[in-house]
Length: 64
Image 1 (spheres, helix red, strand yellow):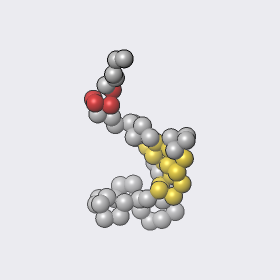
Image 2 (cartoon, helix red, strand yellow):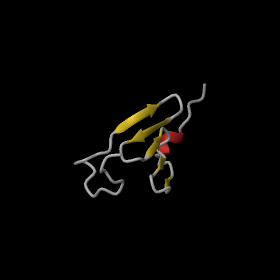
Image 3 (spheres, one colour):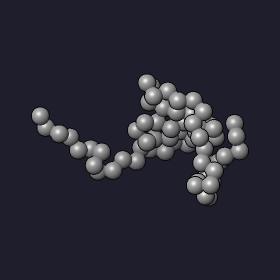
């Protein structure tokens, strides 16, 4: 693992990057050990969970 921390104060300076992507399963592993999911949820290296954060527009459906 690299030295990135999930709590970096300036994420635009050293943003953790993807080291293993599994789009068919909906998740990617970052170099800091975090797992990010396609639904915007995260599993941090220390076991904490960040719930998906969706915008209201994500829940819109189109009627056929």
